[in-house]
Structure formats: C-alpha cells, structure tokens
Image (tube, rainbow, N blue to C red; front, side, top):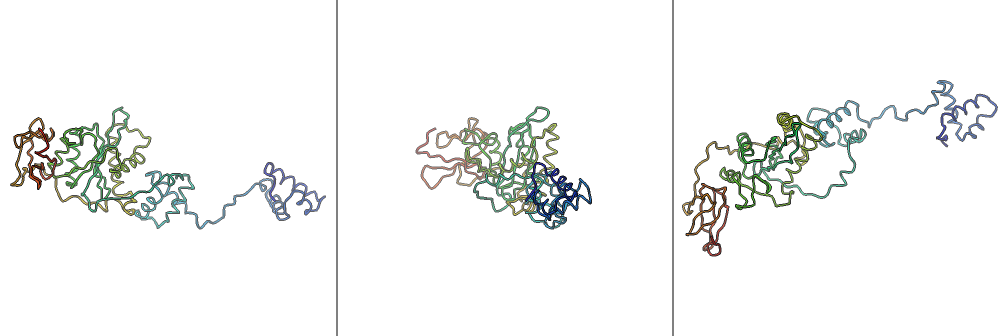
Length: 376
C-alpha cells in the first residue's frame, strides 16, 4: 500500500532511521509502516547510495518512448501552429509539402494537445453541412466586404474580398477606405486585368452592388452586365448563400486580424498581400482534399476589355434608350427600367405570350413587362 501522502518524505526518513537501529526485524518494521519488504529495501538502497535526495520521487517517464514524436518534429509542428494557427490536418499536409518526412495526423494532434494548443469543445459545436461548388474556375466569383475595423490611425478599414467558388482561390483582398462604387470598381478592374472576366458574380443585397429600388440594380452591377458578367444576389437574411465568403472572412479574422492593431492602410495591405499568397499557395484546404487553391485555379480566357464593345441586339428587338428618369417609352407608354441604366440602350423582345415582352440589357434579361396588366 502507498505511503501517507501528507508526509511521505518524513515517513521514509523515519522508516530508514528505525531500520538502521536494528531493534525491530525489517519485516515487522515494513508491516508497521504499511509497505512491502520490496518497497522498504528499495528506499533503503537509495538512502544508502544518495542520502536524503534519494528519498524523492523519480519521474516515471520511460527512458525511451517510441510513440512520442521526435523533439525536432514537435518544434516544427508548434512553429507552424504559431505562425498560421492551423489544425492538425493542415499542419500535416503543409509539412509534407515542405519536404518533411511523413507524419500521422494523430501525431500532430497529440503534439498540439500535449502543448495545450487545441480546444476540445469545437467538434461538439459543429452540425451537419453540405458542400457545393461550381465545376470549373471562373464560373462564379463571390464578392463581399468583411466587417470594418479600426486602424491605429483611428480610420476604418473595409476589407474587400473576392473568391473563386470552384477553387476557393482568393482573387482580391484589399484594404479599402470606404465601400463606395468608385472604390470597388477600381479594384474590380485591377482584378479583371489580372485574372480575366468570370461568368457570374455573387453578392449580397447591400451597397454598392444592390439597391432597394430600381429592381435591385446599381451603377456597379449595370457596369458588370455591360462587361458580360452575370449578377446574382444572395437571399436576404440568408448568409449561407455566400458560405464560402463567410468562412473566408472568419479565417481572416483568426489568422490575420485577431487582436492585432495595424498602423495604417499600407501596413494592413502588406499583411493582406503576404497572407493571400500563403492562403492560395501554401495553406491546405479541406474542401480541396488538402490541396492548395492555386492547384485548382486558372485565369479566365475572357480578357478585360479596355474599351467596351458596342451593344448589339437581335433584329426582332426594339431598341430603346433609358431616360434620366430611369424609364423607357414603348407602345406609347412609359416603363421603369431603373436610373442606373440612364443613357444605356436596352432591347424590348417579344415573348410567346401576346402582350408580354422581355427587356434585355446586353445579353441579360433585366425585366418583363405586360402591356395588358401594367400601367405607366
């Protein structure tokens, strides 16, 4: 049986002093101190060899631990964790891609747990989910502003993000001073010049890419339609529509922002540029079977036109110019198209239903009118 915990060193010392007196047999002395003869001889041997220091408990850690990671590997795992904040699966893939020897995910996780670098309650908070993505790069880009935050200058930074839906490739991560149309358009042009034009873009229902009036169109979305880029808006109050952007923003918050305070816009943009390269080329992505987004993305074959081509409509379309009021005149009546289309030409195209017409801007249907029901 074990020694009494409250005075273990004193009991051992007392036992050995009495044992050296020789007045009681060793067996009886062990019985009185409630220990085995084997234990008694062990402490006697240590006391004779080392004195009082030999009575202290020794580590029970085995001399060799084949299942324990090598110290260099542990240090490497912790360094990656500290730099990027990733979990075991990403760290394992990153190390192997960097030329390190193969290491099991369970080993990486054990290192993180041993050093108290992981939380154990996250998995229990997760619910069922379904992953969807487009089949090819540039079929859909998602665009949004991450919530603004303060810099050391007390200015507000508005991160503008664009993400390819298929490859999860970060196309733009820009520290903006505002969320105005001119700001967004300038960064869109720079992105289009580098990566080409996508087929469609998905945005939420906020400014500057959506409006409560004019059928939801804004000058920015009209410009995108003019470029031949389709515009899709997420369902109101349903952020899951842009789930990839929402998840991307959460990753930025954890891996880039955290509790850090950046000096100014230049410092913020430098950090964004560094991290965007890491995200695209180094950081394994679970949705891509632990590949990096760069392996799944390729630029669009549709270049950005520095000069917009002339609008052309079908021979059966009746072309109308949008007035300053946002209306067109057709069949001796006025129909509201929207102020963002001011000075643009639209095509009124008949449908198979008598009196019903579709209104097109470039190749995009923007409105349907019914001469039998709709008033001016």
